[in-house]
Length: 186
Image (cartoon, rainbow, N blue to C red; front, side, top):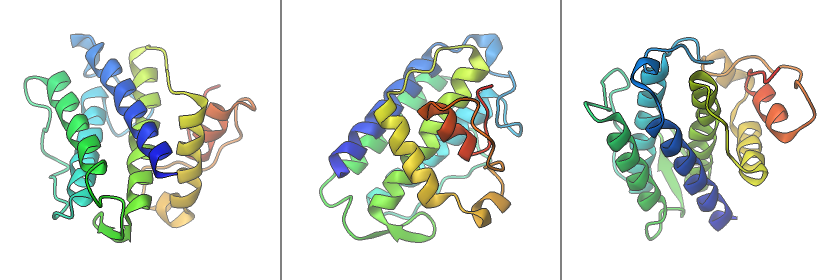
């Protein structure tokens, strides 16, 4: 299972990098399905998540100021470099063993699942906000959905970041996955 999850993480970062690289200058301030963030803030959030989870995989203190601009003058390069670092961290010796702090303690495999679901869900947000095609495989969408169901509880929803469960716009895997986290393809 862990190799399948690492492959899914690689796929979500590959797709995120493709999307970020294609953002036009005038799209960085565009609204997103995450109404609290424009495109730049969404990509910055994805970067913060990546930094925190890479540190966790390395058993380092997971700190990244969520309010700071982690993208700098080269958002595409900064994001790609962080994604590569996060992938390397999760592929490191012992990264998937035992428990990690994210900042709450959880099994390392669950933290990897959180990384996949966060970046993977936001890949759809980013594609939607920038009018780009969404390109994750059904297999990876299924892994995201599985971890959504493992992690996104009513308590987590109450804290923000995830909407109420919606009726899926269709029966496909993507619509079902998105509806669970409060997003609609319809």
